[in-house]
Image 1 (cartoon, rainbow, N blue to C red):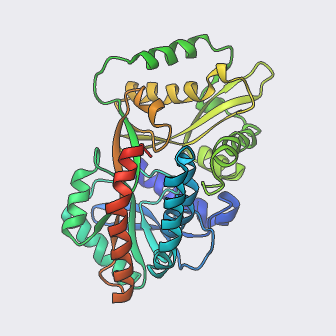
Image 2: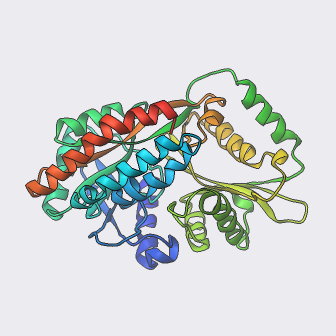
Image 3: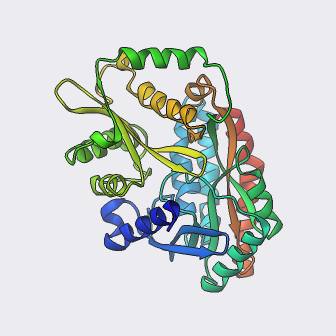
Length: 364
């Protein structure tokens, strides 16, 4: 068994042993393994009707609840903010009519960003035919496809009837290419060398550190940003780390307590950092977010990886040589009833005509 197959089986078995809500508090889903001739990936299956289910399995939550939450980025432009909220609420009934919450998500590792596999047209055909046969009432969804890294996969899926729907603007640092460090990257490396905190490597994490990691994640992603983000538990972090699904690194203060951590996930030649947190109560001059991000960028350069830095903090990431790209979901719905397809078609058109220009204009 290859390392990739072993990791996939371990991931699926982890969710077979545990209730999903015990690992991710705001998520209910079924995690299964899909094996095709050219593709072996995890899939999640949702039957719909679960209010508040996290956007990593529920596009309705992402396009309605999370979109409204994201309008906080326009607080300095109240007229635009109010107009967007009104528009989102106006299309909410139509979005619910799409029944996008009854969906099979392909290659879903239950992170906000799932590095995509390479899919050719033959694999796209097998994927489409297999899932529409086994799940005839579900929309088929592949998240986290971006125009920088996944153009061939996106073309193959489009050729076999998948529709590309925009979701957000992301930022990518290409550690596979030789490039001089920007001023900010050099400053981050200097800060990393001067920090009084002790670097904690993956093998140095102790069982008691998992609870602290969960707390630091909550401080950043749930308390500072949004409760709609995946609510990862101590048990999730422990399972992912012990089973080698994520690699942890962090910074420990003199008293032995973690003050920041990052969880790296690698898939083929792509690196993501889906787990990150720091003690937001500590002085900003410590640069804890900068340090954890710098560690991941350093790892990407050393190992020739494309670092998908996900969305948000646009200027911070651009100053660290990350390039922007629009992220899409590939959606297949040709097997669904006409009324459902029409509702989806209208929503997708709105996202293309209004959503993409906003993503680009305001670097969302």
